[in-house]
Length: 377
Image (cartoon, rainbow, N blue to C red; front, top):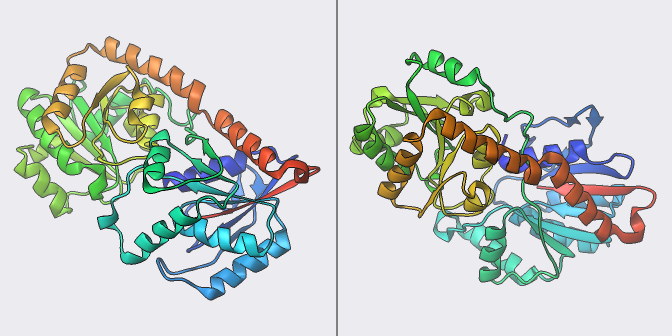
């Protein structure tokens, strides 16, 4: 499940049902999460739009849904939904409209002309919604630099499931047994789908340096597109001098929390992030992290890990080496300190409470006795 989908699912499942009801509208096809949330039945409608293709039919269906549900707050998620929701929300006289931004790095060269036009339109129309939620402070600064001028910025970070992602004393032994490794093998992990922005090239170069310095270090890669059959990824590793018999390609895992809890250190080598869930989840597992200084990565890690500039594999390797040089007890102490901070600042309960407060403020007198929240993404 993607970060945005996962956060929406956690938000909907935990909101106070005595004050809020939710109706979810998805622009594309059915998402991976179910319409069942923690015993709640939440209406979920899919407009089945083709990616990047405007649809009058979808706009009509969204308009009909809003006129039927009559939400007090229309919360949209991400650029295309923001524009569509703003237009339909204004036409249907929805009392309050809020946008939700989920990115901090915007590489326009990675997007087609349609997406670039959508972003330019969003910049011009940004004063019209009643508020703009951003999941990272870095994302707010980036969009301000682009020209966003909303009436109100609201920073609400992603929620992190610290009950699912937690220290597991059995995980290190279990993971090494699964990989066929000795119990004292040190594991450097990277959880990220295989796309350029996640910096696998940077990680591979750093891994090449680490592999020469640490004969007992192995590298565990997890995420969509991660496989030994991925020739681009294998080529990156081989050209960096990483022995492939010390690289473990695990792909997507439904039990990723058990994998991460078995790492010695976790990495994020990205050159663009908003709020990096994988970093927060590793810290929630009590695993120290080495991250690049992008998005809110440094805000998450603070002193419980290392932060380096993006695109500098030698600095990245040195940061990893400094953590590997610590004793297991020192890394455990660092990781547990990070977990306590994650629980305090980014728990599901605290993030849901911030959304509820924001929606109450938007809805004003309309929230009594019951407020409808329609989320579009």
